[in-house]
Amino acid sequence: MSPIGSNTNHPPTKKAVWLAMLFILIAIIGLLYVKWWPYYHKAFTAASKHSIGSSILGMEQDGPSWHSALQYAIAYFKSVWKAAILGILLGSLVQVLLPVNWLYQKLGKAGFKSTLIGGISSLPGMMCTCCAAPIASGLRKRNVSIGAALAFWLGNPLLNPATLIFMAFVLSWKFTLMRIVFGIVLTLGVSYFANRFAGTTEVPEPLAVIPEESAAEESFWSRWLKSLGMMIVSVVPAYLIAVLLLGAFQSTLFPVWVSGGIAAIIAFAIVGTLFVIPTAAEIPIIQSFLTLGIGAGPAAALLITLPAVSLPSVLIVGRSFPKKVLVFVVGAVALAGCISGMIGAWIL
Image 1 (cartoon, helix red, strand yellow):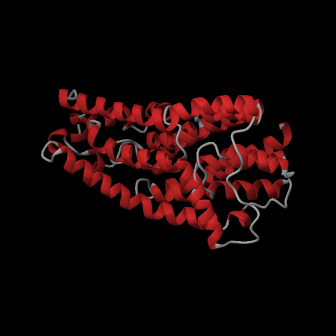
Image 2 (cartoon, rainbow, N blue to C red):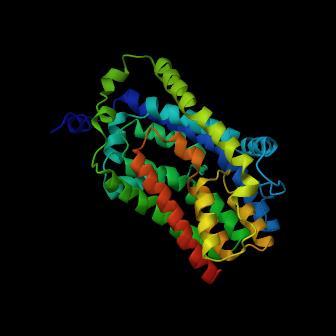
Image 3 (cartoon, one colour):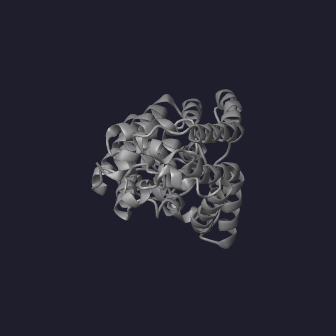
């Protein structure tokens, strides 16, 4: 038996249990303040007004500009800054508070069970793809398999219970049902096959061989500050630059002059895969596009691709997953968007 396997049989110490409980408490308080309580009130707004606000996109610009980049970045970060801070905080804390061997036992295998647990664990988070990305990266550094970490990353935006409730009130039950079906396929199916695609059945040994005792040699604060510092350095610069870049081109990326057809579905699916939005922002975007005369097909493509991944979120997790896995996931999201668009053009 490998050293990894022998380590995972030891029950967590009392200290490890207390640290895990501390992580859960911090996560609950953070999510209650940033996500659960605001979304509880937003659900009533969606039910009464059949709207959750206006589209974040500014389509009045004639072409890419620095002004457009700044305006979008300000609007975007005004919406996500609390969740982004919480994501970075939890992404750093997961590396120092949760027992590494316990994580390996539950989420470290390449089987479907680990992927399923990762997907279910994403449901309370309700985060956008960029805010969930630091946590997924932190999980990868703590013995979590590719499939489980991907399921957590994709499940946060795609299967967000609050977004599904908003969607049912604002768009329709058909949009909501399509989102649930494609969300499950991507979160569980694509994540599971990504494990196989990576050609691994266990977490790579350099990530896995971290005895519990060695963590005790450094103080908690030292380990956490080191983890937090590395997380900030790896996340913030790429995040800011990518949001500014996409914001600059927001008025030219979306082909609003093409109302429907296969070409429009493919174009919207590709753009939606790359573009970055806050949580649930796809709902007012789709609502505004439908008002402009965009067909149901392109709208259904955006329904899947806009929240699932984005250029910034892929850059954030770039060092935590093999490049071929990220290419596979991005391609799968774009393909799912195309299929969703074709189905949407038929049934919506």
